[in-house]
Amino acid sequence: MREENREQISSLREENREQISSLREDTREQIDTLKEDNRQQLETLREENNQQFVNLHKEITEVKIITAKIEGTIQSQAVLTQKIPDLIEKVGELKNWKQIAIVAITAFTSATITWFIRGGNLKP
Image 1: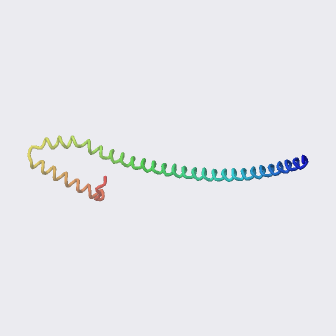
Image 2 (image 1 turned 30 degrees about the horizontal axis):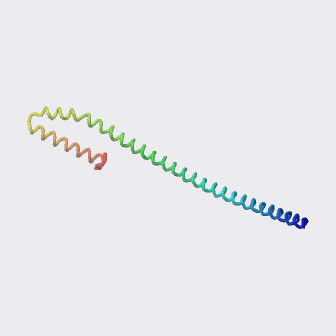
Image 3 (image 1 turned 120 degrees about the vertical axis):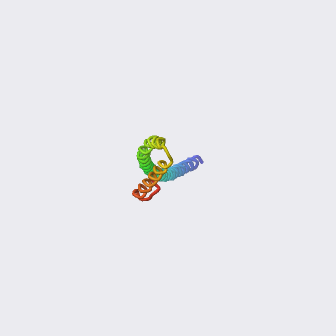
């Protein structure tokens, strides 16, 4: 009976070893599968982040271009703004309404001619 018990124990040990070995293999395969899935997800996230950075860079570039255009427009209109006090002074110097009407008509005519020369756009 002892001998049978030893054989059974030995047999059970061998079965346990085989099961453990099989479980180790299965576990390794699962770990490898999870690693590969994680690598793929990480690569996908990297690509998405890179694309978002590229899009942000494009948007920043567009904003810089628009800002430069606005600054150019402001600078070109600054000259006109500086002339306003001179025009007010000249209007103040006018002595009668005939002179005011002549200046207003002249200003309107010159503005219209300038508008046509610039292409007739309402954009600055």
